[in-house]
Amino acid sequence: MRDAVAALVRDGDTVVIEGFTHLICFAAGHEIIRQRRRELTLCRLTPDLIYDQMIAAGCARKLVFSWAGNPGAGSLHAFRRAVEGKGPPLELEEYSHFGMVGRLSAGAARLPFWPMRNYMGTDLPAANPRIASIECPYTGERLATVPALNPDVTIVHAQRADADGNTQIWGLLGVQKEAAFASRRVIVVVEELVDQSVIRADPNRTLIPGIAVDAVVVEPWGAHPSYAQGYYDRDNAFYVGWEPVSRDPAALAAYLDEYVYGVRDRREYVERSGGLEQLRAAARVCAGVNYGY
Image 1 (cartoon, helix red, strand yellow):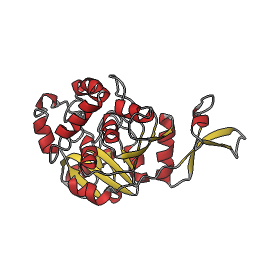
Image 2 (cartoon, one colour):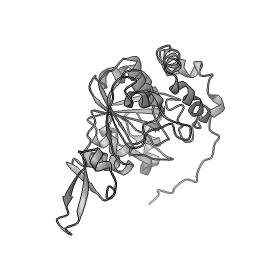
Image 3 (tube, one colour):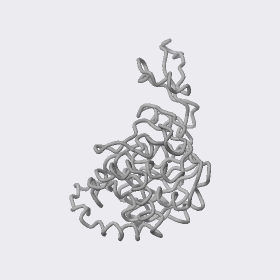
Image 4 (cartoon, helix red, strand yellow):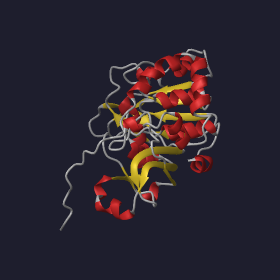
């Protein structure tokens, strides 16, 4: 992880750490903090705890997002302090969930924009001048548009990949595929590295092909406190506990000192977190698929 971030994440970059509740790569975010990257534009549909930590650490210049919060547990208080002028300044660019999906889909397709209907009757276009509108050349209907998003770096956590970067994900999906295809550089972080024969045995599960990947990092527990389906569960106690930590700038700084700056890598983070074995997933394997012909 240290090498991948050093080589591929640069000051001033537009960075996407994707994952929709599931497979959020906290390990990569922590390494970016440790390497003290600055002036980043952080993009994501649902920025949660890892972006709160990166904002508190001074990594972010701008946040491009839809909903932001601590899911099921509260707010993101480092984010709130920045927005309210009580912390480092943070520029905001807000869309709906599908607006962010549309931006990354346009970026992946190498289109300049994405048309959509879901801004009709909302105040978001008034709040965000980058949401424009066009007349449909076929029906004459007025449609909203969002500009393409082509990040400098996308970081995707996944269950497994082979050494060529062919990456497989199952369970709850976000826009990992679109973000990877839209990006100039891609880091894939996986729970385990598998032989190419494993990937080839179940080809429909390959979400990101190796041709789009610049680095593969093997980082068990890399999504904690998020979860990796089939490997470990979501650490709900961590999310609940983040509310008072995030609310108190001194407590948040102490957390970063102990669990981010105070460890060399993810292995040390796991040890300091108590081993995390209580979150290990039990086996529940689905029936196989016959690919014979």
